[in-house]
Amino acid sequence: MAISAVVDRALAEIVPLDQAAMAAARARQDTLTKPPGSLGRLEELSVLLAGMLGQPIPRIRRKAIILAAGDHGVVAEGVSAYPQAVTPQMVLNFLRGGAGINVLARHAGADIVVLDAGVAADLPSHPRLRSVKIGRGTANMARGPAMTRQQAIQCLETGIDAAREQVAEGADLIACGDMGIGNTTPSSAITAVITGTDVAITTGRGTGLDDAALAHKVEVLRRAIALNRPNPKDGLDVLTKVGGFEIGVLAGAMLGAAASHRPVVVDGFISGAAALIAHTISPVAGSYFLASHQSVEPGHRIGLEHMGLKPLLDLGLRLGEGTGAALAMHLIEAAAKCLAEMSTFAEAGVSERSDSDDGKGA
Image (cartoon, rainbow, N blue to C red; front, side, top):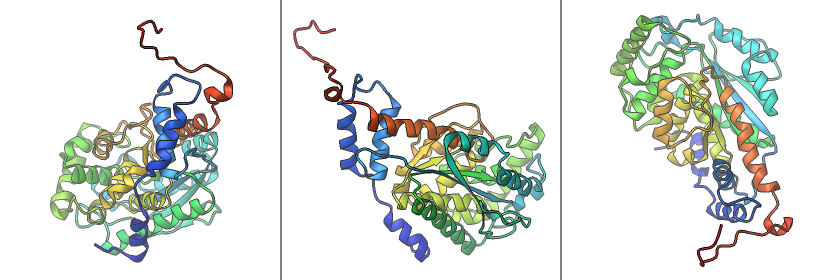
């Protein structure tokens, strides 16, 4: 089903991983100065990177983090421990370089671009801020659809364009981060709908809800899903009915990165919900996803398992912002460097393993 010219073009450009490049990467791994498989998941990562980038020896020249921010009408139902005013305040903190993601991005050597996808406030101009506001916060999904279908399409188009821009500027590794008070609520709904899991299981405490507030959040989500009846097989419909502007933009960024044959580092629960939207729209796009970490939010594990993704880290993180993705960039880049920079047995003059059939091998 056609969506729009921009989205349809991106979907047409998403192709399976390059099997020839992956075979060459595996073959090189077998010649490096180490026992086969001794670098574990780093070896698996290097082969995946080869297939994503279409390079037998993949190289990561530039790393970029696309951080999308948006507000949510459903906060009117009392589903968050923090007021909506925190969203623009935190965006300003990102721009000043004082947030957790700024620290970890600097440590990873990654560039950050912040997208105002739908903050319910006016933000000042800044070199690192892209004003792509789809609306001033979504509508209250407990009273009707979170957005119009056209707004959902605009989210995807905006994200695709953002990813293509980063690739044009030399990014070989793209991570996605989020900011939006109340955004664990739509993420719980998206995860429940697409994976067919009860919303009571996919819903966590978000920014720190007590038991009574958590029960209320689950009740609000049940009402929203029953009212809107999103189609679990239609990612665009799910985004329209129970999504968020920043979630939709990140889903588009993931599709755009996959269309550009670039790996996507999926962060935590909100980024994972965006990945579920993108994966539902284009299952092949999921081949380009790398799960950075296991969030404390219960729905995150369910979403990753649905997409067949295995997280690299489990550090008890639940901040969002792309912090887990920034940390995982170190491991992903290390995997590529080991494949590219380790000597082969022949180059190092090291004897290879000798498999004798006399039963006397060590």
